[in-house]
Length: 105
Image (tube, rainbow, N blue to C red; front, side, top):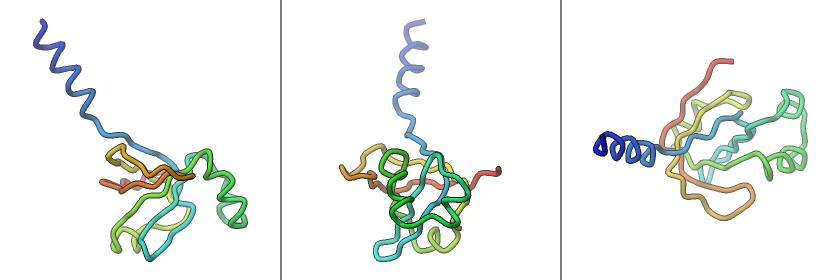
Protein backbone atom coordinates (compact mmCIF):
# COMPACT_ATOMS: atom_id res chain seq x y z
CA UNK A 1 0.00 0.00 0.00
CA UNK A 2 2.78 2.42 0.96
CA UNK A 3 4.65 1.65 -2.27
CA UNK A 4 1.56 2.47 -4.36
CA UNK A 5 1.08 5.74 -2.50
CA UNK A 6 4.74 6.69 -3.02
CA UNK A 7 4.50 5.92 -6.74
CA UNK A 8 1.38 8.05 -7.07
CA UNK A 9 3.01 10.98 -5.27
CA UNK A 10 6.19 10.70 -7.36
CA UNK A 11 4.29 10.55 -10.66
CA UNK A 12 2.15 13.56 -9.78
CA UNK A 13 5.24 15.56 -8.79
CA UNK A 14 7.07 14.78 -12.00
CA UNK A 15 4.37 16.11 -14.33
CA UNK A 16 5.43 19.24 -16.14
CA UNK A 17 3.15 22.27 -16.19
CA UNK A 18 1.00 22.98 -19.23
CA UNK A 19 -0.12 26.47 -20.27
CA UNK A 20 -3.18 26.63 -22.52
CA UNK A 21 -4.16 29.66 -24.54
CA UNK A 22 -4.04 31.43 -27.88
CA UNK A 23 -1.02 32.49 -29.89
CA UNK A 24 -1.25 36.28 -29.71
CA UNK A 25 2.10 37.34 -31.18
CA UNK A 26 5.15 35.85 -32.89
CA UNK A 27 8.71 37.19 -32.68
CA UNK A 28 12.01 36.30 -34.30
CA UNK A 29 15.45 37.09 -32.84
CA UNK A 30 14.89 35.35 -30.47
CA UNK A 31 12.21 32.97 -31.68
CA UNK A 32 9.32 33.45 -29.26
CA UNK A 33 5.56 33.36 -29.14
CA UNK A 34 3.23 35.13 -26.75
CA UNK A 35 0.39 32.90 -25.57
CA UNK A 36 -2.56 34.38 -23.68
CA UNK A 37 -5.00 32.16 -21.82
CA UNK A 38 -8.10 34.31 -22.31
CA UNK A 39 -8.28 36.82 -25.16
CA UNK A 40 -11.09 37.71 -27.55
CA UNK A 41 -10.90 37.21 -31.30
CA UNK A 42 -11.54 40.95 -31.69
CA UNK A 43 -8.43 41.89 -29.70
CA UNK A 44 -6.35 39.21 -31.43
CA UNK A 45 -7.32 40.51 -34.87
CA UNK A 46 -7.58 44.26 -34.28
CA UNK A 47 -5.99 45.03 -30.91
CA UNK A 48 -3.01 47.33 -30.54
CA UNK A 49 0.30 46.15 -29.12
CA UNK A 50 -0.57 47.96 -25.88
CA UNK A 51 -3.99 46.27 -25.57
CA UNK A 52 -2.52 42.83 -26.14
CA UNK A 53 0.33 43.39 -23.67
CA UNK A 54 -2.06 44.73 -21.01
CA UNK A 55 -3.95 41.42 -21.15
CA UNK A 56 -0.70 39.44 -21.36
CA UNK A 57 0.66 40.92 -18.12
CA UNK A 58 -1.99 39.01 -16.18
CA UNK A 59 -2.87 36.10 -18.47
CA UNK A 60 0.08 35.47 -20.76
CA UNK A 61 3.47 33.84 -21.10
CA UNK A 62 6.28 34.12 -23.62
CA UNK A 63 7.69 30.83 -24.88
CA UNK A 64 11.01 30.33 -26.67
CA UNK A 65 10.43 28.08 -29.69
CA UNK A 66 12.40 26.67 -32.60
CA UNK A 67 12.37 28.32 -36.03
CA UNK A 68 10.27 25.45 -37.35
CA UNK A 69 7.72 25.78 -34.56
CA UNK A 70 7.56 29.54 -35.07
CA UNK A 71 6.93 29.08 -38.79
CA UNK A 72 4.20 26.46 -38.24
CA UNK A 73 2.21 28.40 -35.64
CA UNK A 74 -0.38 31.02 -36.55
CA UNK A 75 -1.82 33.94 -34.63
CA UNK A 76 -5.12 32.89 -33.05
CA UNK A 77 -4.35 29.17 -32.82
CA UNK A 78 -5.29 27.53 -29.54
CA UNK A 79 -2.31 25.69 -28.08
CA UNK A 80 -1.28 23.70 -25.03
CA UNK A 81 2.38 24.22 -24.20
CA UNK A 82 4.33 21.96 -21.87
CA UNK A 83 7.27 23.69 -20.23
CA UNK A 84 9.78 22.94 -17.48
CA UNK A 85 8.14 25.19 -14.90
CA UNK A 86 11.07 27.57 -14.56
CA UNK A 87 10.35 31.00 -15.99
CA UNK A 88 12.28 34.25 -16.13
CA UNK A 89 10.88 36.81 -13.74
CA UNK A 90 9.33 39.24 -16.16
CA UNK A 91 5.84 40.35 -17.05
CA UNK A 92 4.71 38.27 -18.82
CA UNK A 93 7.06 35.45 -17.76
CA UNK A 94 9.41 33.85 -20.32
CA UNK A 95 10.35 30.18 -20.54
CA UNK A 96 11.21 27.50 -23.07
CA UNK A 97 8.51 25.41 -24.71
CA UNK A 98 9.21 21.70 -24.45
CA UNK A 99 6.13 20.55 -26.37
CA UNK A 100 3.48 22.43 -28.32
CA UNK A 101 0.13 20.86 -29.12
CA UNK A 102 -2.28 22.69 -31.41
CA UNK A 103 -5.81 22.25 -30.03
CA UNK A 104 -9.09 22.14 -31.89
CA UNK A 105 -11.70 24.74 -30.97
